[in-house]
Length: 247
Image (cartoon, rainbow, N blue to C red; front, side):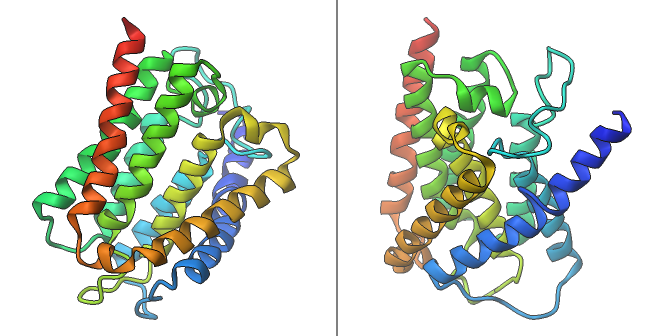
């Protein structure tokens, strides 16, 4: 990568849409969901999770992202790669999640992963900007259903209300997933706006997600089956739709 590409990568991770911007998103999510802040001291796991969350958010294809236009080999798409973003998000979740993974959380994890990875196959690219901008009816519906599955599964996986093992980095991880999800869900519609407006739209959408999270706080804390169904149902619909669209 050339020096300009390196500089753009650093800006994306440190400032926007990672770093400083992710902190603002996390504050909006904290306010809406009333999530516990966790302990003041950061453990090495927290630091690693924060780094992974910042890099994952930096890959989000939102207006003004410095990474969006970094050209890569056609076979791998752009620097904002679906597999890279998924692995970073999964790593961040694993670092901050409660230690015990029951059957419901494992089902929710599968529901979040399956349709997300299938998007790349259906779109014939791993480039997040390309996946977010494709306008075919099957891909648009599949993308929306995949994001819905992730949105329902994320609180179960991260455990933001789990007071038994509260971690200060959970808020940032959930915010990072929100940035990626909002960018994919909005698709080409978000790209119509200049970057300040696009950034504000993503902030507002995640604040709304925080309010919704607060409404189902007891279900999240209890890992209720209703949330597993709320994740598995759109995931199954997305997988069926995307597979049918390939035939």
